[in-house]
Length: 400
Image (spheres, rainbow, N blue to C red):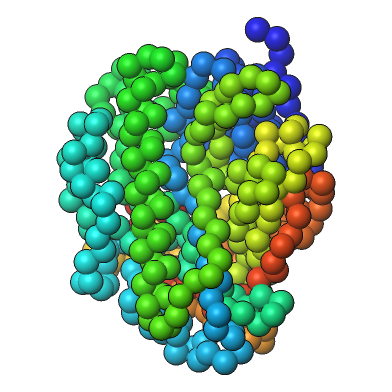
């Protein structure tokens, strides 16, 4: 097998590059987008093309994580942003648990009840309880104003506990253990878990991954539809993408399984929603047909990309299960009250969030996109007016 071809956008992080190189065993092409940073086994911001394999560690724990954005006919300047954000956080559940008792139903639940990969059927109750919940970490529900003052809704989250348990089960099976076991090797720099696509395990993973991806899509749709109902409006543009998934695709005249972790697909004419930081301008992108796009395996960024870990930003914390809250044990570098004051000064209504998600913890999205010049174009720029996330004290075992 010839040496894999690698294309890195921007300055390569040495540890992330080393992770990519480990993942290129049995692969033909590897890409690191400019927002890349270290992830579990495979770097976040990577796209890897395998001729005969699929990688559950490459897709990661949050199968089907992605972004959904819709445009409404409402004028952003005419809505009561503060009132709407209050209604959102009282209607949509963030972190663990469910604050609202409104049932979130979707045909995907019947798909889980009768799942082809039988062990997933036992996750039905978990899936029912978390459908339409957003989770924690960098997952959010945002309101935006575009250049024409039209209101957009944007969300970012994935398959929650259903996807996490699915991924964990297959990582355990990759070690020869049972689906219900936990994998032994959970090191960030562990070797990739690879399944031959034609093997029984490979086929089972593909089926299970697709179901988890459908569940993630259904959850994002439910949240956006619920907010549209809350606003009494509809959507005239919809942009919806996975960025943690594996697809069978054609590149350079050959067919590959392309595993993307935190890499938005951007084929010519395909649109994608890419969120910035809670204080930055997000974008709707469209893929271009160019030599650079081909080298990128038609992949682009999924966000601005972290420049510091959550612990660096927020300090060290310990979860007190008895009191059900986080306790600060060491300070971080981010001055969270100052960040909140800055966001308020920009006219951004913030609900939840914490120092680990402060703008300082991320790169600048415009700088990141500059590295991808010639592969995508910006069709809409979205200025945040409302940001809702899980609070800093929210405990969520499935956080991204």
